[in-house]
Image (tube, rainbow, N blue to C red):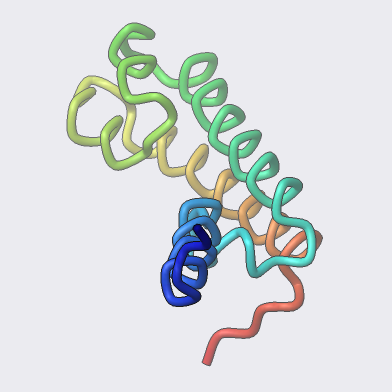
Amino acid sequence: MKPPATLAISLAIFATLTLTKEIGYFQSSDCVDASGFESCYEDADQIFASCVNNNCAGSKACVDSCGGDSTCVLSKCPNLGIDCVKACDCVKNTDYIQCAATSCWNQVRK
């Protein structure tokens, strides 16, 4: 017995939606190079965490518990030098722009 056409269409739409991952302001699946875009963002997050761990005063365990999330680091790790964290965040945001320029250049926001 074949499933109704509407069920098949619904399943196809659901499968597409589950593969979409929001990265920054973009859906990675909309980008020219979706996997490269996701990987680039992950690398930028790791570079940020490494920058903070290696250059800013504070607890490595606290920074690690945030998994590279700059908002978390700023709120949970108050002993970090704010200027140092902001400098690392600036590098991360520059890397994010580079990710969009190389892997998601086909997307234009209005």
